[in-house]
Image (cartoon, rainbow, N blue to C red; front, side, top):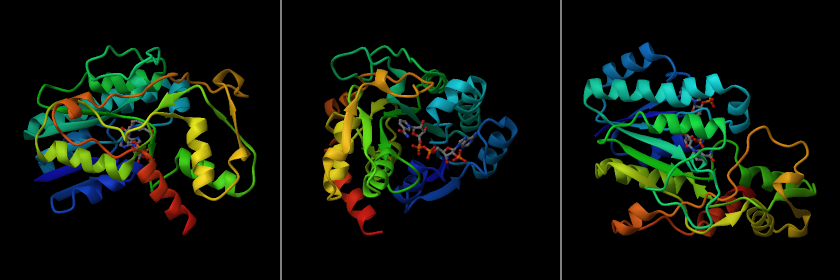
Length: 280
Ligand SMILES: NC(=O)c1ccc[n+]([C@@H]2O[C@H](COP(=O)([O-])OP(=O)(O)OC[C@H]3O[C@@H](n4cnc5c(N)ncnc54)[C@H](OP(=O)(O)O)[C@@H]3O)[C@@H](O)[C@H]2O)c1
């Protein structure tokens, strides 16, 4: 199978390139392919004629999107339209990576794939716009709280700050499931290779809060967890431009009910990542 990966230089993109080893991979990093450029997308897809496109490229700066909605929609929504258009021209299916931030977070039980979306941020709205561009043959993977070896992420930031002895305050009123790029990339490979269309929630298992996760990072790193103290979102100073859903736990119902083994509990990959950070 020939697979083109957009955003191939990103945190997930890099692990996607590894996960598809054994297939023919066309790794299109942002520098090679700007998805907001329709001509470029049609040209690259036409020239490479992939069987599938894993569309991981996105403007993921949630606060940036709030301040520049046009750029958010140009990349995340219109960019996805271009990718789907290009894929149709060469008969490729698209696997689009979306987010828990398409939900408003007012639920008190995990969201299933069929629940109504209602994003509260420009990032969430623009990613939902991308979802609406997909056809019935495409695959939509919603994930949450992405961490991993590559790029910047919450686990790495907490690890570095805690190690340097800084006191940290972290919000304890946002609930979600941390998801590790290596595990997520593996499930995306499976869904693409098995040609499974439709919406799938794909997260590591185990809901937590950012505060509880930060404490776990400190503990695993052998540091004093008391360095990390809880605050509420309302106490953030200065407040962040984009609102976040208070509760965005995704029930991986389509995998679970379809008999596909779920990703591991998040503690497993978290431990692996912290060990790796300690060894650097
Ligand atoms: N991070 C999370 O917590 C999270 C949660 C849920 C879903 N997701 C989704 O997961 C996917 C992968 O995100 P990630 O966590 O790997 O974030 P990431 O590291 O920011 O990866 C996104 C990649 O897309 C690239 N990109 C930005 N603008 C682009 C454009 N116009 N055309 C092509 N590529 C562009 C970025 O390049 P530059 O670095 O040059 O901008 C980056 O390499 C995204 O679709 C994101 O929406 C992420």
